Length: 82
Image (cartoon, rainbow, N blue to C red; front, side, top):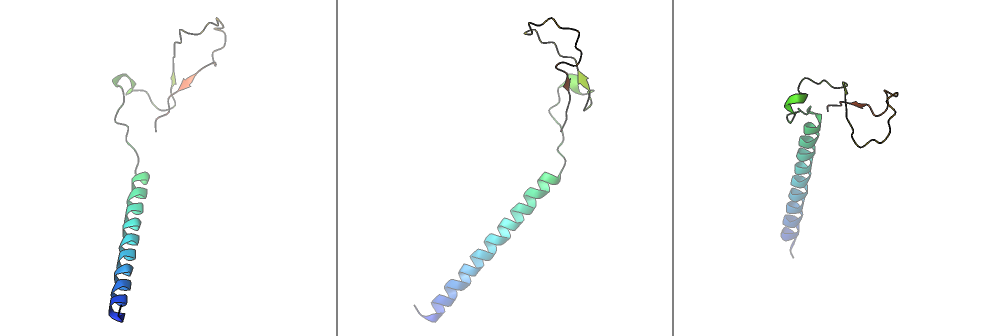
């Protein structure tokens, strides 16, 4: 190989490395921008529209064999919306 061919090879190699770095930088910036954007809750059940995050829900569990109704704090479920 002569010197011109080697120079052309290294120039093209530098172009490929530069374009790869530019592509990775652009894709990471786009991905991080997507993570920074707040997510909107779109699939909310119609009966849950008025329920706010942190509200306590009343849950009926028919599988419980215990008849201890004295404890009110057992098994409470709170709404957490993200």
